[in-house]
Image (cartoon, rainbow, N blue to C red; front, side, top):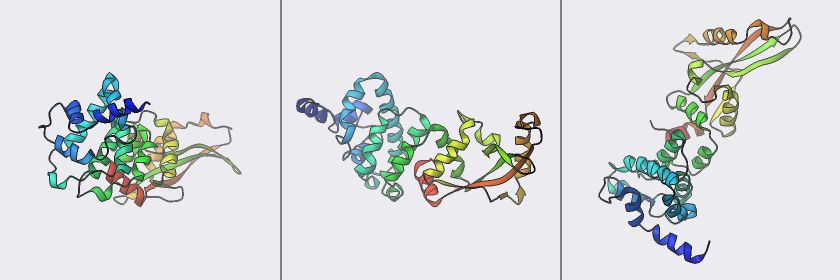
Length: 263
């Protein structure tokens, strides 16, 4: 990248010119708040490429949609409550907003950015949360929405047992209504493994949970028994058995969900 081109790009990124390019009117509610919050971010990292992104029709759609959502989050925030976003959070999010197209992931980035722009919630926006979102699939973001109002989720492990040995039929089998909205529900075990690796949840294969004093596992076992008929057994002498388990959100996971999911 030549120095002359860089100077042109940096000039194009100056506020209020960039805000006019994106929002069309500086008088729109929330635009001044955006300028105050992101003024220290524009021109850093790959945000210097925004003039190019805005010239590309597809990239422009993503930028305008995501920043319009962000503007709407700030339009009722008093100016005195708006704080400049720390570059450690603002720069990587701004870079993502130029091309992230999945609505759930985009919403998480925008929610975190809005929290980092508000004096009353800036303490919730930890820089590591950006990297966590980077490592989520859309389905995993969907699964995490369950934990906005819950702290645990029951599952069963299915095993084909003989008198002396067993083989797995399936692990981390959750209620179908918990996975029906996922793009790839067959990947639930991999999703939970990733969420566990990110420190958001803990998987307990040796614990159970009750909901309002009701044992939720019989219905879960009945459903999954129908998904593993006897003819699926690896050998004729195998019997299908189930073990109870529970997925629990961690303290870090709870903080992440509160900062990055709409409440």
